[in-house]
Image (tube, rainbow, N blue to C red):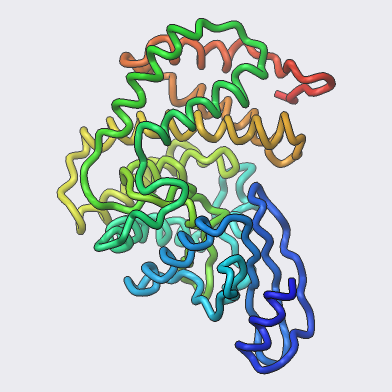
Length: 342
């Protein structure tokens, strides 16, 4: 904390009047809202120097390209702490939350969604333009190794904990095909990696972007899947189709759009993203027993059910297994005393 206090003094010329720890999420990073006569900022203390460096380099690229990410006001000598612009409390997820249960979004809420999705291609192409991917964390691009990590996350931190019986060899055969298909992309485009409503802030009516330190070179379809199929927001199929149209019109300004090919890749990357999400919910919820993530498990099971209503011929056993998960699993797990309320 002393590093943040020193940075605040250097930036403002005065002591902060208050430093309040902001609510933690899935990350070990700590954020403090610091206020005083010199002004208000958010101070961050990271846990990994490479991750911090990735954020700072990406943040500078966002700002150079005219995309609203938090300005950085100071960085500690060891690179583990920094001060950034306070973008306020207008987290898009929180602004949408009152309407999430029944999906009755106001005109203003729908405008925020349209504006955010319409900006996504600009983020992907402008941030990727001339960027040095070597600074990305934990790897420079979305590659076979990164896909394997996500598939293992699903298998070991979620699927095995459900106690469903499955054939590991047949599942691995489908995983191998899914990995090959997922990394078949071209272009120098930025993949935000965790593009979701919790990582967008609305300030003065405009979307601002945060928590992109895990971004890397990758396929554009992944971020749209991450945003529209997120279990925490569980958008309706009709709203997803509407926002997919918004995205495709914006994408057309950066590259020609072949809708058939786009939707083929978008669908398989949606499958991969949901597998990764369920691994995260399993680890954070079932293992660490954090209630928010436990609450997301029934929602992601429902999203699997919807997605595989049109089977994936390339991944027949995975499709069958997810159908069983959605229809047969009763919420019981291998962990003592842990059951999911489906």
